[in-house]
Length: 137
Ligand SMILES: Nc1nc2c([nH]c(=O)n2[C@H]2C[C@H](O)[C@@H](COP(=O)(O)OP(=O)(O)OP(=O)(O)O)O2)c(=O)[nH]1
Image 1 (spheres, rainbow, N blue to C red):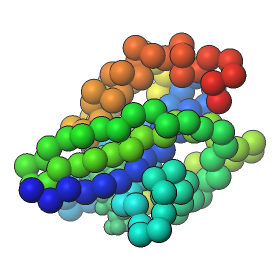
Image 2 (cartoon, rainbow, N blue to C red):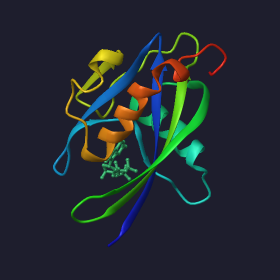
Image 3 (cartoon, protein in one colour):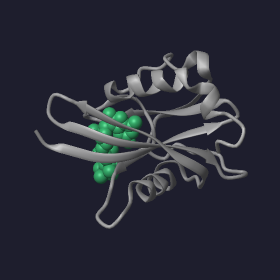
């Protein structure tokens, strides 16, 4: 099975995380901004670039969170996930997504996440206080 290697940015701000709705011919569901890692790029550079392209935002401090491995019916997904704050004054604009939503802890599962994201988002719910702890970002 072919493997798709991508990275994504989990954007956090004031106790919320940003969910983005993708509606295209192959996928319909909520995801994090991101995409394929281009040759010569690190996973971190790729998700900063994708955040610029997809949301027109510059991201601030961040850290590596987790790597998701997930088997879709026709490919294996390896997704490197980073958590970032927004840079001062930045506001995401939906350039490719049909809707953006800021979710607080109690709403994390209120949207229909792409299948590969569900356990990742659940883990964020468990680790919420640590993710938003003073000095973490
Ligand atoms: N960006 C992103 N993709 C995800 C997430 N969860 C998930 O299963 N995916 C899947 C959907 C897609 O099959 C794949 C991302 O591939 P993609 O085609 O969007 O990558 P890309 O943005 O580089 O695409 P392209 O511009 O090169 O066409 O990963 C997620 O949270 N963010």
